[in-house]
Image (cartoon, rainbow, N blue to C red; front, side, top):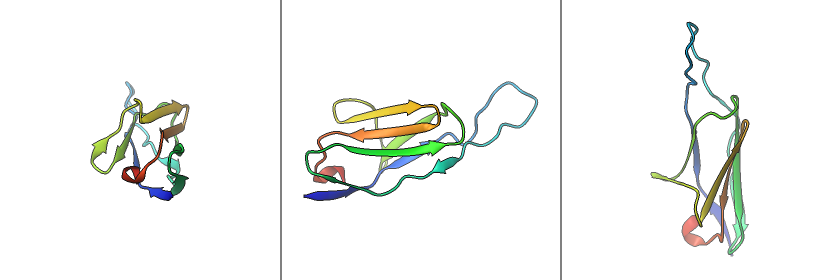
Length: 92
């Protein structure tokens, strides 16, 4: 079976630092795309931001996701990835 997954990636809208200048907003360079994955396989979602290491929060509906057995969150520079292991129907 194949499932479509629906997840959201949130980035902090502004990067604050000690400066007399206004902080520039963090924007998405590449938005999330719909992905399909076969049951039991690993799904990988990713987005890209305009600022490296900006705080990011992954959500499924209203639930904030954290790295663990089911999910792995990686962030390197401006690229942010979410891995969903052992995909099943309730992950869609």
